[in-house]
Length: 399
Image (cartoon, rainbow, N blue to C red; front, side, top):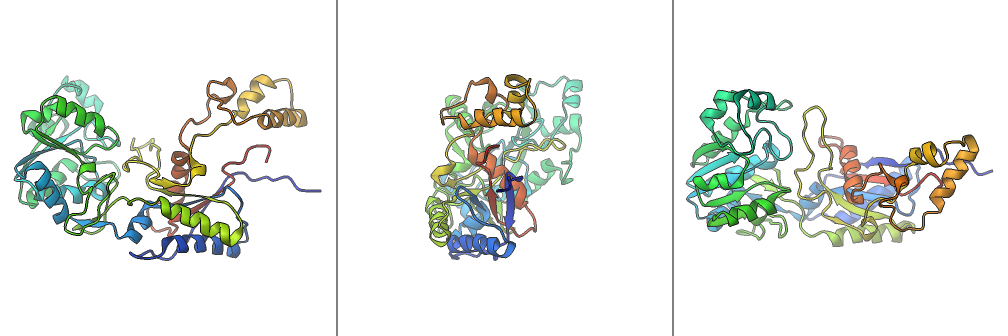
């Protein structure tokens, strides 16, 4: 008698060699997964998902740039005089090196920070203090002096960094003057300069539109800086500096360039070696929020910059607890199991959007969901598993 499966989705971190520029990444990833299956004693199956971090993809591509490259592009596009730098996230890894390059390409930086927090939830203020001071964060523009008077020194909970001081000092170290203000309306920067570099990620299109409508002379986003090579540098045609990470004190690693060919290559190699048709994706930040620090993992412009076609779409699932509590509330045991299994098998592939039995399921892109799972599995430190194998993700209760 065939035993019933008792395990659903499994996520495994796969150890790989340290990836260097020029490495054949498709070969390394495919071989690492196949070898892990052999050594650990599990089998690959159709529709398994192989995911690799954007970091090893960009590293294999050699997609790096220096602060001098950033400075040259910023100066050419924004004039090199007084530049408004607005809505950056507060991050030593994600933005500090970019800011050094930006400041090096200008005589003065007017740094406009959003408050009470940046786009991904790093806090510069508290609503309690805002309320006590009678400040309206939707309209009020605060000088640095007013900010310090109301909020004092606000250090991020997990890093202990006062980013107001830290960013100000970085700009001065690069030889530029600095003025820091706090506001949430993009057009507020136009009282200081009409050349603006907007550094927000997911709201950048709206911010650019509002600035242009308000009369800004030059408006660029981070996605407009290093969107082409500067003096032989790396670049990202679609995202520019968005999604970049600190590499050294003078260099950044950019988000991977076009890598659809890479995921198709991995898929093909695994098919030829094992006969299994797997899905493959590249992932960066997941899409989830930390309940303690209120920080979103959303510093990349997208969760997945490249994936095979089998990962297009959203889940199309029924909510088991809804079926159990409503449609089949009078059943139990094997009868209940059989009734729920029949409902699942009756799905014909058409969308379940609007169906009450699908309420509470997760209407997000598959790549965002799987990428979040992979980001949590691989971690951001020294686990040494930049490739993740997800098995059983597309199974349901009847498989």
